[in-house]
Image (cartoon, rainbow, N blue to C red; front, side, top):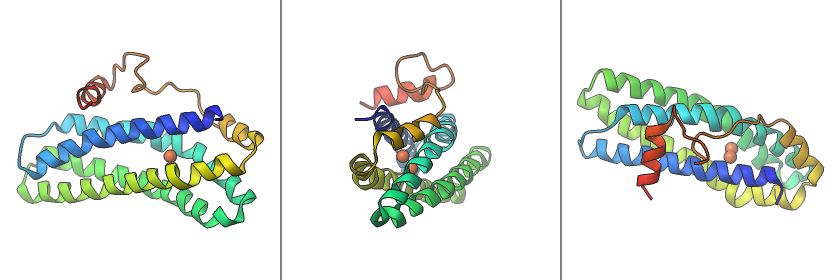
Length: 182
Ligand SMILES: [Fe+2]
Ligand SMILES: [Fe+2]
């Protein structure tokens, strides 16, 4: 497997864990239990800083090359690239809603947050599944190492704070929540 393919799979695994932490909080909110808003905001900041800013742009390059070399996959690739933009905006909107509910804890706002949270998590999971089941296997079949190298060349060398190799100062609480969930 090309190192970039491995990196993308690893990113997906960590994002899945973060979505699990977020979902556990949304479930608590739905049961009218206390929730950790700071933890949810950390999860959303992580999603903005890592998947949205560092992972999606690399996939955009990879999927554009797949679309060019495999016409049968072109529509799916273009849709996935467009969805990266949508997920970026959805993340910002959900972050703002979280902050608003943290400041004004009205029941109606909490209900809206539960619905928006579930919708956000479902959209993220559907996006990940499409890549894990369809697009990445197809890219691994169809693209040559040179294509993967070009996409990898656009990737910033940043170590993910949740990969367990460094103490994630900024995301300590999120990291601990992931560890205790397993
Ligand atoms: Fe993606
Ligand atoms: Fe992805």
